[in-house]
Every structure is written in structure tokens, then in C-alpha cells.
Image (tube, rainbow, N blue to C red; front, side):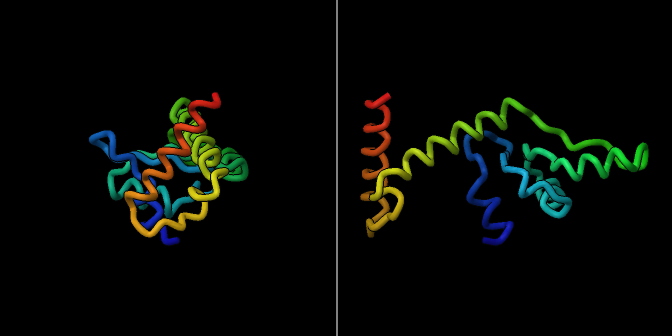
Amino acid sequence: MSLSTFVRTSLSTFSSTPTLAADRAYSNGPVRKYLRRRGIRHTIPEKSDSQAARRRKGTHGGRPPGFDEDRYKKRNTVERAINRMKQFRAVATRYDKRGYVFLGTATAAAVAIWLRT
């Protein structure tokens, strides 16, 4: 999956400013640069080796990237909900041909999860 496809599918459409919450795998310079250039706010934790390298450089290492812990915790909640939905075979495999049928399947799975909790 290309970076632009990943960003387009992961963007939040509920706010006026597009936002992205990603894991440490996407914590590198080119990804952050791309997101800044496109005006996309992002919450990506910094890798520990990147932190160590920045600290080793001292004042020449630059400032750490911004990180909002609360937004990252919400990302984890959403990811767990998606993984719980994937436990339903019909949702995980998506055999449905039409989008509206899959939406009904996903809704039924969400209701079943909601009733169990």
C-alpha cells in the first residue's frame, strides 16, 4: 500500500482539518514531511532509537515532534473495536458483492458486540 493511499484511507473526515493517528512504523522523516506538506495533523509516537539519536546530537538534534497522548489512546480504542469486528467471519473476509450488503453485515456484527458488552 502506498503512502498516499494509506493517508487517504486513514484520514478523519469528521473535522474540518484532516487528521491521522498512526503507529511507530510510520514515524520517519518522509512520512511526517508528506503529512506536513499536505496540511494533515498527525499523532505518531517517536521511535525510541530516533529519540536516542536526537538526544545524542544535543542542541543540533532538533525539537521532538508533537505527540498528543489522548488522541493516540483513542486510536487504540478504535483499533480494538475493528479487531473485535474482524472476529466475525463475514466481516473479516467480505464475501459480499455489494457495499450496502457489507454495511448491513458490519452493522449486525456491531449490534451483536454491543449486546454482549
